[in-house]
Image 1 (tube, rainbow, N blue to C red):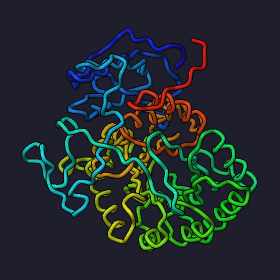
Image 2 (image 1 turned 30 degrees about the horizontal axis):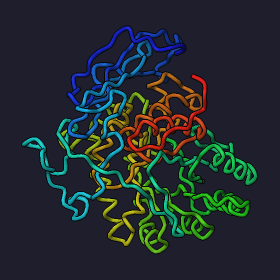
Image 3 (image 1 turned 90 degrees about the vertical axis):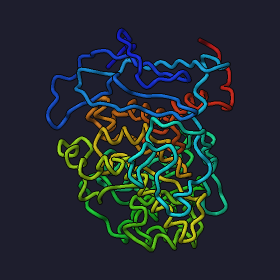
Length: 440
């Protein structure tokens, strides 16, 4: 797509309230004629997109998949609350609950207050129920006594030290390239670096701990020796790799198995007082498919049954259980971040459902990490088959996720995300006033 959006057709959301509505305009746009069954593009329909604010809770209504012939043309906000400026955002945009629910603290997964009768225990609250305002976790405790405040969007720069990652495999083949990229990412606005020695793309073969260490540790050591003191996380599911990285000054572990692949990760994180990111996934990468695989939608219907809360219910229950395990092992709750695992064992529609229902995950009391950068579901929604060209789509998803409560963003394109999320942050209540730069 090119040019300004054409909002010739505007549809009122059926989910709007007198507090906040979002009207979505859509237009037909000619797209590529060379689409193949392996390159199906999708966009979001205006029948229900973003929206309602119900007693300080923002939710997204369902997003449908359609062909390349339809594309988003724009979103307009209208606030109609009492005494609020029309240019002000909904108060709930940047708020989530600070205290953990009783189900997280005690391991009880009962039916939350306000849930419709007949809802099975363990089911998440429905997005249309009224909810009190919740306050987002305001900081993430790292190793070495460091803390990363979450009052603004925080960017984690992806540094894949692998030959076969889906988007940038082989780009950092040398220690020198890794040091140069680390310095560049920080100059572009990254708050943390995420080093990984094992590809987690669908179909990727597992990499043993010795090989991961051989890829990651020399780069980590060189980055620290170059005087780069920024926080560093290590993307691994192996305690042996994590231990070696912590010995070299890493601050956090990004465990995409949430401790399932290596139970030794729990006591290690507790004993080293480091931070940890726990991600949900339905299966190991070697057994996984891309979100856009035609078999994915049918396959996942059985994996996330509606009677158990669908994909959001499954992810929420997973994180209730896994965060509780880490806390029982002695990990400080303030050191834990949860990742819904976008693109891991989910269809395109399920990924977008997880994003728009982020407030339900935030009710667990932990910060949420957004990791949508360049992924196939973003490419399908933006009709872009090439991962490196999914920058605009990735930014759009990240901004939406920020408005719904995500506070950390694992990204490839740091500078572009910093500019976009900086503008989105300026909308939030209490954000510092943007400096005057002149011009229009």
